[in-house]
Length: 218
Image: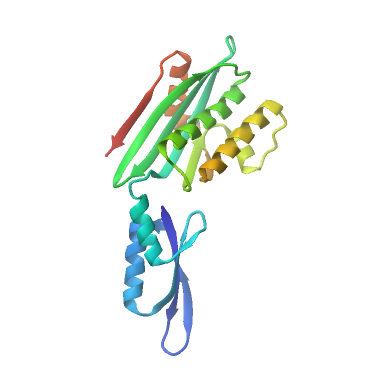
């Protein structure tokens, strides 16, 4: 979890100046807050998380201890593949996250039947990736969602309309899942080249090769 710090600095006399930091890691935010309190010149110290909730220094310390072992700093990649001949989809997802002081990556895929188009496979892939977050225990956290399907991400952002009933149904399911998880999504459109890992997992699913692997990263 990252925090932005706001505080009022007392100058000589009665003058005061309001300061605000950028979003910084929980560890650095706590260290900074402690130094500001020690200075004796910082008042009205407030921490804002990426969801917009405000906290005191004491509350941030307690929260940071509680969530240290929970998954956080989550980035999700997704991609879908499609075989028109048999209406099968391959769903691929890659999730990066921190837990404690360690970084991890999950690679997973799934074969899905009764898909009508390649576009629908992209929505199904994102929904599949969100179910992985649910199983991982991710909740009430910011999450960056990356994919090369501009249509899916722009529609979720509300920038593009969706006129197809089937795809609208998937959008509703995705938005409901995001709401239930309580995550705050940041949607990022990337190139197919930058989404190779999720694309490969989707292709492997179409070939019947199921994968689920959790790896600790250096």
